[in-house]
Length: 73
Image (cartoon, rainbow, N blue to C red):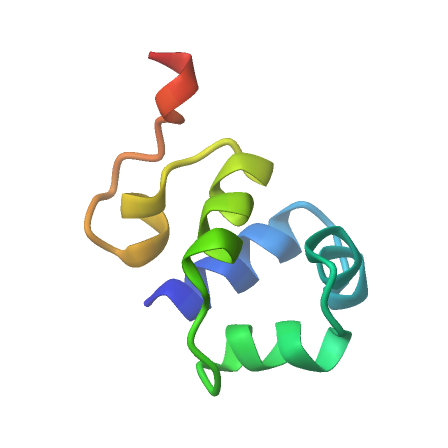
């Protein structure tokens, strides 16, 4: 679930994998593996993605449909 969500968020933002990889300080291949579910996403990367997209980790993990960013509460 998380893999599809991060891909959808990236595509909705009109970004390329290399853009996110650069922001996350990893290679495009590593980021691609996150989106494909071939590599577990480390907690610090998951938090960085939630902050970048102004959403919450529960939404990225599929635990909630609520996209509210915790800093917006």
